[in-house]
Image (tube, rainbow, N blue to C red):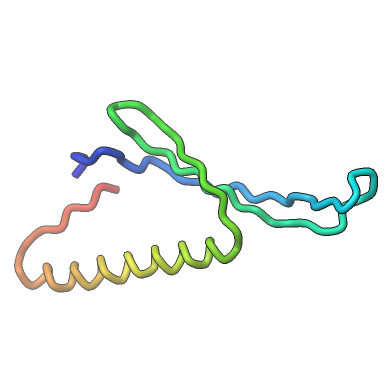
Length: 91
């Protein structure tokens, strides 16, 4: 189950507000909400991190992608349940 080049060991989202200035001497005229996705993984017995910036649209897309993966796993589990094949899950 762990014979892969990279193994996920954690994830975190850091959200912040970034100010937008029309004139640097004046107060901000707008703001942007930015999410930073940190993915922690093991590769070649080393702990590594990968960061990617997301906007709110990206967060929605990522949620949809992960929900689709859950549905596919549920569907495959149902198919395998009738075969007697055990499903291993590294939790």
